[in-house]
Length: 369
Image 1 (cartoon, rainbow, N blue to C red):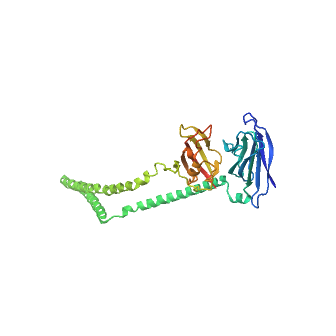
Image 2 (image 1 turned 45 degrees about the vertical axis):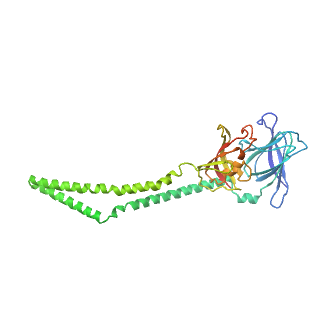
């Protein structure tokens, strides 16, 4: 039998901020060769807080009928000091609720209830083997940052090599001349020699020789003018061909990828990440903000610390999240427009979310395990 320390605070009828602390020990009993049973009794008016030492899993919440009344009992979670999350509602009709919650070592959590009856939580320890093999999200994020920095350095080196190679290719281009260009160069050299000879003769000869110079200058001007218009013509053709090739490549990524999934879920990729791609069963950590599509009012957000963590595709979040977050890469950002049928349905989540509400979430995938 092993023990783990929880810290409990009383929750009087006044606001929850007025809390007095005392300690409670929850017991662990042998479940099988690899897992240990975990259990905790949530008494009314008390809050149980702990920084997790050993990772554990909560599987079920059960109402204590000996102390139950006709009113509903609500189980709540305060995770990492963020907004309180509703885990389930229990009453005499609905006495048990299955849960699938994993808490990793280092997580700061508080469990408490609203109502006048006790709740029994049960589950099991996740085991040392699983914890040893898995990396924490913080370690994964650090490794991803180091990998991204290494990739940036490699890209910089490749860019430098590419630019040097491009310059090396451009430099020998003037040497790739045909026989005509060589002949033109010879003609220009001969003309320069003739000009030098004529200038010397002009100093000694009578002024009648100026007419020959003028004729030769006119010939040179004609020869110099004739190749000039021919030179830019091939350049115009090449320049005209390049933008035709580049246009589809540049225009395609301007607008973010937007698609509608079955059920009316609209997924819009605002930024494509460079990290691993998320899939069903992964433990993901996200930053997000949630707004009502009707009036743009924000009802929830998480943008600090390790982020909000959940197992993808396991029903721990609303259906729109399980579908919309799947396929994201670490570092990517998405906008999810979720209809009520894939969110909180006809009942909503009062008072923040009215019934039949379409929700808009901006989600950033921070890490995955």
